[in-house]
Length: 536
Image (cartoon, rainbow, N blue to C red; front, side, top):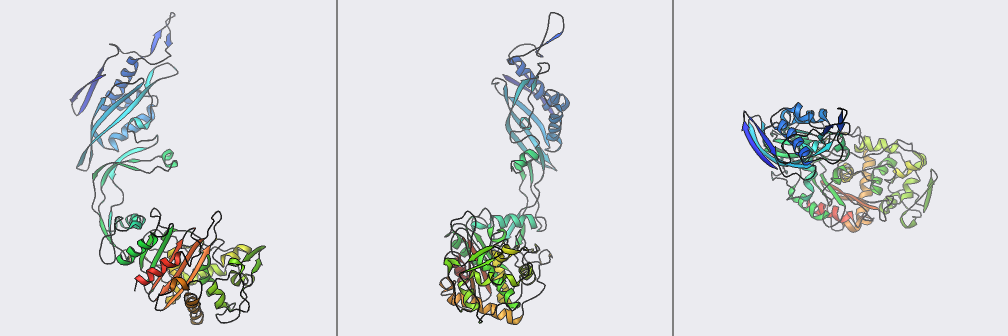
């Protein structure tokens, strides 16, 4: 097959030679003069003539004729029209290659032009010729891939602004945040572009892209950039991340598979670091995991407020406690005889908390989490996407399980770092990654604070746990005003629980999780303690 290209009047045309001198429409006259439907394999002449009719019409802009040469004229006409109108491809030249059976490859060259910006476009495509069953006529087997090989049926080609402008994210000291420098930063950068790309003064680039249709989206295929006409200009967004602490956090999570950590400044709520061993998803901000016994910080504040527990008063810690037809037990089935609530908190006694469930209303823990700790209201505005914790109202055994951070309770390291920060500060301050002064957004607030007596006891519980309880080993050597709580959350199908740890030191609060790591004191604990030390 030889192509002769003739360019003129803003369009090109070509003629195909070979396989016969005359066109063959696929029919023959029978002895009675009626058309005879041709069947059987396509001839070389039929393939090349059909390809010639389609490609010549497309190239010259005669789109109704090009569509008529296919077996789906409506779909073909719509996509070919969009090729010029939406994709903005002009001066198209189509050069066929050697036919292989019923398939004809072809090269495409053209120019993509948008608001004074132009760039050449070149790619290879292919079409297949089939015989129409009703009359045997050879036609182009229409699929969107005929126009471009990356298209699925239902997709479109569009040229225009790339959507959200890029951003240049800075740390609190003005240094640029990049994935090359900080392995975990990818999802944060994506979130910053989504939120601030248009607000930060950037300018979107221009690109030719595939816009996916329903069928492709059902296969989880994303839009795809085919040609970038201009890069665009990034806007600048300053974050609260501390470069030294972020680097330290990256180093710590690299030591433990499936670990995540977050660090906040107690006095302001500024997020100073966030890192994940699995950088594809920001578990530190968006994770939704049962927090295990770290939730006992919130539950303890509830029990103390209601007069159901007091730090230095005796409190039951039996081996087992049945509630809602569920039999709860402690780790290794331990019990504390004639012990105080402080001793139960420090050793993370489950039954000490479950035993109080009959005296609580179903929504007590939910209200405590929302009103005092700002959790579960879905109203945090940290500057990038985040999950704000969930403490749903539950009853019977599930309510009992919620008291020890199981059941329907779900948190992430940022949520639990905020819990420790609330205890240290005495009031909830919503964590944030970008100052609200940048865009005037309103931060979430709590509707009330704990009483001075409750707060004092809660700090006593966390300080004792850091000094002599399950957090003592990890917190050894962490000086200053400190408090901590460990946690282990059982997950169905996992051999080991998720290990949790939350703590504060002076003006820093941090929390971490190691999924399938085991006990929080020995897994997440060293990560959190190292960052509290590094923060000075």
